[in-house]
Amino acid sequence: MEESVFRLPVGPQHPFLKEPAKFDFDIQGEEIVGARMNFGYNHRGIEKGCEARNYYQAMYLLERVCGICSHSHTTAFVQAVEEIMKLEVPKRGLYLRMVDCELERLHSHLLWLGVAAHEVGFDSLFMLVWRDRELVMDILEKISGNRVNYAINTIGGVRRDITDAQRKEILGIMKTLKQRLDYYAKIGTHEPSFVGRIKGVGTLSAERAAEMCAVGPFARASNVATDVRKDDPYACYAEMDFKLITSDLCDILGRVIVRVYEMIESCTIIEQLLETMPEGEIALAKVSRRVPEGAAVSRYEAPRGEDVHFVRSNGTDKPERVRVRAPTLANLEAATESVIGAYVADIPIAIASIDPCFSCTDRMAIVLRDRKRGTRVTTWEELRRRGIEWYGKNKGIRF
Amino acid sequence: MTDDYESRVREAFPDSTVTAGAKGRLWVTLTPEQLIPAVGTLWERFALRQLAVIVGEDLRDAFQANYVFTGERVIILQVRMDHDKPEVPSLVGRIPGAAVYEREMKDLLGIVPVGHPDLRRQAIPEDWPEGVYPLRKDVQIPRPEEKAAQEGA
Image 1: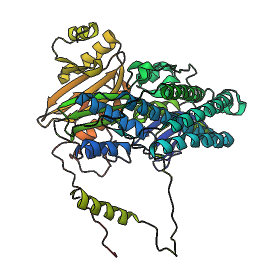
Image 2: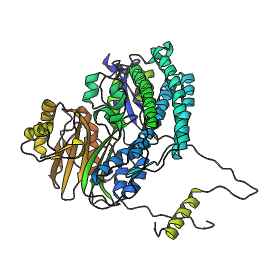
Image 3: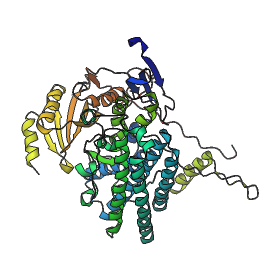
Image 4: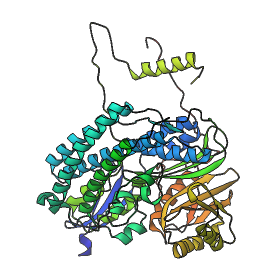
């Protein structure tokens, strides 16, 4: 029966997720007997770009690595730079960074849960989850001004403080969110149509997960207890009281359980942070633009897993080398392997179960032309030209 | 700050320079030939197997590959090689997860992981010129000329 193996190519354009990746599945009947993947169709050269920019510009560029975990990349980067510069970040700054970090985890996991429900055809859960995701997005918009690239980090602290009214509001929303999450935990683990679809699918053993260097919720669902917040605490995570969630199911159900309970832990962390928020400065007043020679490895637990940044400085205001290791890179190969043994219909959910990182869309503001008061639309070219002129006139910077 | 762990690492790598960095990170320098035994030592004596990332670097007069291992502590193996012979032994046989990082290092810096089973291009397009490695310092990628829209254009 060997000759009945059929090769099913998927991608690289839009292969069940909005990100270019190419998969080759060997199928025998309905069963997948082999899987390979290739990626790198959209290398953007961000690492090279960072070498031509100063640290502040590189920080904003790195924020654009990903639309969902934008805060993760800037935090990992500024942590590395702060380590080289030996800066002592004010505690309130660190707390605010962590609030954003956990909010980001909440919105990312909620997004994933919605996508997962959608992939298995459970669209009512998808809509409920995404409704609640808006609660988190609204908080993020209120405290940072942006829904996607928050631009809240700076070298030596954060850029925006939160008011007492905002603090109380977030605490209120966390209460609501926790109730909803309890409900999702019940559905995710008991609803027979959902559980029947994901139980025992896309399995990856603990040994194999460790061998393939898998990270984040994907590894934790295969019972590998790894979490940078516990293993190598950064910011003030050592002071927080939270549980490390693992599951020994090693399948997609395990990944749902890990993520849902992790969100409840995130709510707890946010509550702790807001209740014990210290007073004081949010950032260092003066930070040198030049960074002394050195190298640092910074680890950060992004929603999808461990995010590693390597920064080498050469004494100038531009980095010598920046290396970004996003969690998906560590997980993709293992995820491809986990598909083997499943059915063709399980491919989308099995690959999506690692939460592959595709650039998320920002909300777009559309202003219609106003005939009475003349045009109100600013085109991209005009905006660019204005920016170039403004900086030339006011700051003496020529582009 | 010398602790017990650090002295054990120093003892395990007698021929190398071990530098202690911030947050207890340990930086160990190696030659390419020492890499495979060193990875074995990390696994057997320190139970370090999680390879977080391989960072290739162009130091202008040499190339360096940094192997970041994470676990109880973070140990970074720094392998320095000649500028004329950028080759390191591949770790894929021991750590399958190393494959993607080695391929990327080969594409972007031209550091060849000797013994890697699958060296198809990963990070650079198929029509990219042979022998041009974008992350090398002597490769300049010109900045596209900025054109501001003219008034009334």
